[in-house]
Amino acid sequence: MLRVEYFLLVTIGLTALWFCWIWYKHAAAAAAAEDRKLRPGDAATGLVTLFFDTLGIGSFATTITIFRLFKRVPDDRIPGTLNVGNALPCAAQAFIFIAAVPVDSFTLLGMIVAATIGSVFGVRILQRLPRRTIQIVIGVALLIAGGLFVAKNLGVMPPGGEALGLSGPKLVLAICVSLLLGGLMMLGIGYYAPCLILLSLLGMSPLAAFPIMMGANLFPMLVGGASFIKSNQYDFRTALGITLGGLPGVLAAAFLVKSLPVDGLRWLVAIVVFYAAWSLLFSANSRRPVAQGQSA
Image (tube, rainbow, N blue to C red; front, side):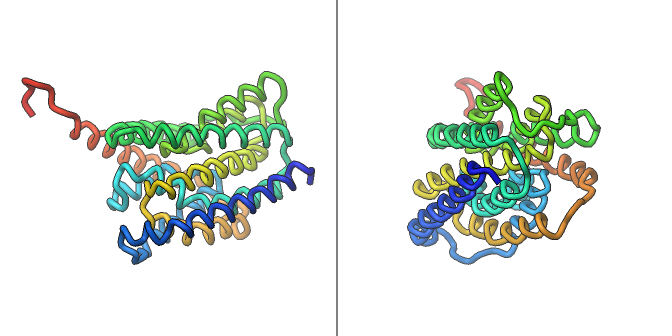
């Protein structure tokens, strides 16, 4: 393992500890403002979504769908709850894949740093957005995610190449896109699918893309999640339940499952994701202010 990988693993551990400290400091205030009782359904959500997230399906779209179907979290708190609840399970993911899968150090580090910087600006933008705008953004993101699930099953996704890294203009492009995706994560838009498509189009091995996806997905979650915690823009007990269920889900997928036929699951996920997207966009449209002289 190269020094960059060692550096990243140490950084993951230290940043995760910092995140835990921030959450611990603000947990009392957050819990006092909400119902303290944990719900088994939240842990089950984390267990299932993070299990399949570790296999590369992604968790944001499916988790949002569950939130919408069962009315677990107010729409304006969905982004914060997603990032806070998924942060520590994703730290376990990143640690496992960066340690186990070889990938070019410059590509790995460049895309991780870019995504983290993007997340800082994403949180600031999100804090100024009204509830209806958040609903529209997440709804459109879910439509895109559902389309990607369908494309994957139809075999029209790029198959990828054999490269373990990028250089030159390709690396610059990948870093710029990672910067944008890091910001979009703070709006509830998943990093995995667009990142995997990008790296596959640029000729990278899909397996080598996993450490990049996991690492670049993680640090924006930890940094952005800490900001959501400080501003109390998340649902405390739901995020904690997802964390407690998600950690064993990640470990089960990483160590107990070698291969799993997930194409059929993607079709099911696509259906429920499209429903959640319609539900969000319908809610956003129903809250649209009525223009003067227009009947309600």
